[in-house]
Amino acid sequence: SHSSKTEPPVTKTFLKFDTVIQLKLYGDEAAEKHLEDIEKLLDRIDQQINMSNPESEISRVNAAAGKEAVNVSQETFDLVKKAVEYAQATEGTFDPSIGALVKLWRIGAGGAHPPADDLIEQAKSLVNYRDIELDAKNRTIKLAQAGMSIDLGAIGKGYAGDLVSDYLRQEKAGSALIDLGGSTIMALGSKPGGDVWRIGLQDPDRERGEQIAIVQLRDETIGTSGVYERYFIDNGIRYHHILDPATGAPTQNGIKSVTIIGGTATAGDALSTAAIVKGLQEGLAFLEQTPDVEGMFIMEDNKVYVTSGLNGKIKLTSPQYTLVD
Ligand code: ADP
Ligand code: MG
Ligand code: MG
Image (cartoon, rainbow, N blue to C red; front, side, top):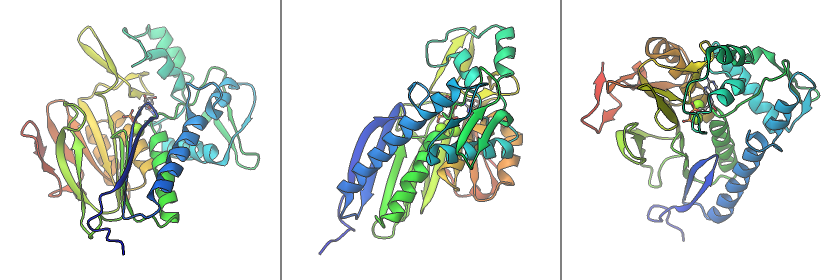
């Protein structure tokens, strides 16, 4: 007989999407096969959407900007369609057509100075999710303006997370902990023995693995976007990798990170980015009126704000931070 209560999980760790992927399957007799399939699935998504791979479907769409519609796989089509829907829902604070600005700023890719204003204006004019033309019948994507480009960096990992959880559910695989680089964490099912999962939330000021808080949950998804991992400093200003499509520059509104709890992983990824761009007040209000999700904002002054559904449910484990009620 098989006792999942005492069995340790079967795990797999590898690099993908420029980050560390950690998979843990509990009480799953076909765990080895499932882990292999998940790695293949993530590989496939990466090959479809990775902008730095010129062969990817997204790169082909970008190369044809202003010229022609490009036929893509159903998965890529669905992802871009969802991305456009999140752009609409967030009033363009999340915008998957951000590519021209990302390339201009080169954050984390060797940029050291902010670009000139006229270049920012020019790139900004190429960012507009309404110019992503989707044709469901022919399964094609066309970018209306030459020079435009799609960048799925703020939603791709979440989407991949949802595909992983769909797959595991379909396989009736039991429970699992899926960690895509710390920014998408999925606790599927409940822990063997029926326990809740206790998930540590990353302290943005510390090394990977240092926690600011522990949340207890069951069958839930956590998505975090933060301004602390990719950045450069110029003249005392920190320029990080989350850009405000309205200004064409990295946000500077005192937010260090936003964590979304609940909803799909796709939602968690897209909405955490949008909430950073919206800022604390507008971001909190936006998440309050968005069904299924709660949010936690960590500010540069170490104050922590949460949406009403998290009141009393978050315990900070670091004395450096204060929860504001
Ligand atoms: P993380 O890198 O922690 O997952 P995000 O999910 O916010 O953080 O993704 C940030 C990436 O998304 C950036 O590196 C860039 O490629 C892209 N991006 C930056 N600003 C925006 C924005 N306003 N809307 C959509 N994508 C963005
Ligand atoms: Mg995101
Ligand atoms: Mg992300």
